[in-house]
Image (cartoon, rainbow, N blue to C red; front, side, top):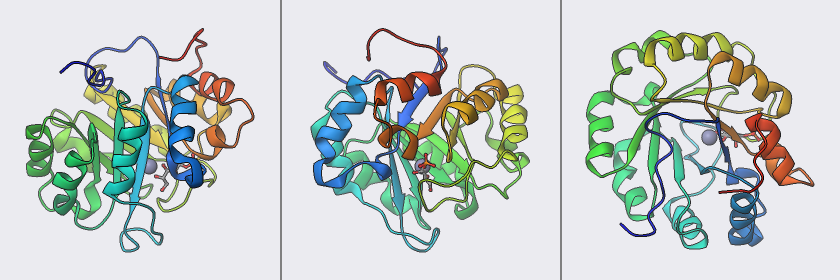
Length: 233
Ligand code: DX5
Ligand code: ZN
């Protein structure tokens, strides 16, 4: 499709990906915030969906995802479902322009089926685990998901401190899933914690508070990536 976003979540990479989480954006000017981080080098936009049940907070729904799509028609949209019934919301987020959907392993009885449904809709599919879930819970799906999201904070709020206990989990998953799938980390990512994540084998870094709170979003994104580019994509 002409003008469709280029998929960064399958295949080899030359540099780690950085995805700002709009949870920390200024919602009164969301479109401008999205365009600003894309111009500043963001590889994708991370959209955090919370239901007040799986996590003790509410955030946004498909209408906000659709607004991100309108603001940046060619950006890759990475939806992170922190909700109890992820299967009920695949179609609404497909219609809202999502490119990847990640759901939590802790709430899904048949993760294999849900991964297949997401892929059949033409998206990439990810599975997330909370800090207390062992990486081994993902073993049966290492050949089936495009992306493994290892939470580095308890999901629910932006701006929390990074949990180093997430690093050995990333190392174990990376060793087994190979270089063509993404291992993503989310929560408490800034320049210093990002370096530890990259060393552990993480190649998709989500950051909310640090990127949106920085005077120079370009420098914040470049320092999280650990590689400086002259221009954003
Ligand atoms: C937490 C969300 C994160 C969060 C990132 O539940 O999944 O995406 O917004 O937060 P920071 O980078 O602000 O720690
Ligand atoms: Zn997230």
